[in-house]
Image 1: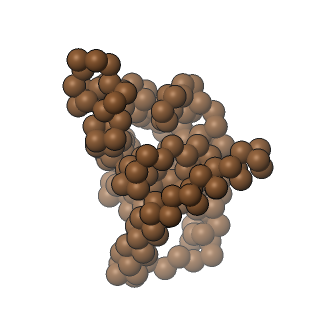
Image 2: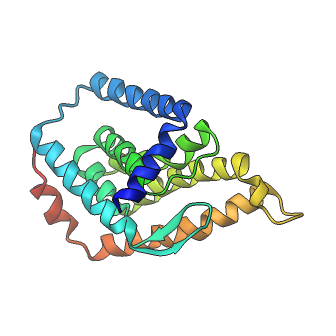
Length: 207
C-alpha cells in the first residue's frame, strides 16, 4: 500500500504544472471562505476529517471501475454531502477539494493540468452545492451530482475523445460514459439518504 502511494506521489510530482493548478484552486477557496467570514473551528475540522476518512473508505468500495478512471462506489459522496448540509457551501467546497486530493493520490490519471482539475478537485468541490439547500436533501444531492457530471463531461469531451469508438461523437461518448457512472451513484446516495437518520446526525455535528 505504501509503495503504491509513493508511486502515485511521484507521478504527481512529475507534473509540477498540475501542482500549481491545484494550489491556485486552493488559494481561491481559502479567499472565498475568508470573504464569507467562515470560522473553521476545531470542532468543524475534526468533523470534516472524520467525514473525509469515511468518504475515503467508501471510495474503496467500488461496484465498477473504468480503466481510464472513474468508478461507481457505495455512496462515497454521502460524507461530503453531510458536511455541506451541516456547515454550508464554503466548508463543503473545501472538503470536496481535500477529497479530490485524496483521490488523486489513490488513483492518479494525468494527461493535462486542466484535466487534473476537472477530474479530481472540481467534481468533488461540487458537493458544496448541496449546502445551498440544507433543508432539501434530495435537491441538494441532485445539484451536487449535476455539478460533478458537468466537470467530468467537459474533461471527457476535451481530453478523452480518443477513447471514443470510431464514428462516435466525443460529446455522445462523454455523455454516455459519465452517465453510466454518476447516475447509479446518485441513485445510491439518494437511497442511503432516504434511510439514513440525517436529521439526527447533522445536529450531532455541532460546532
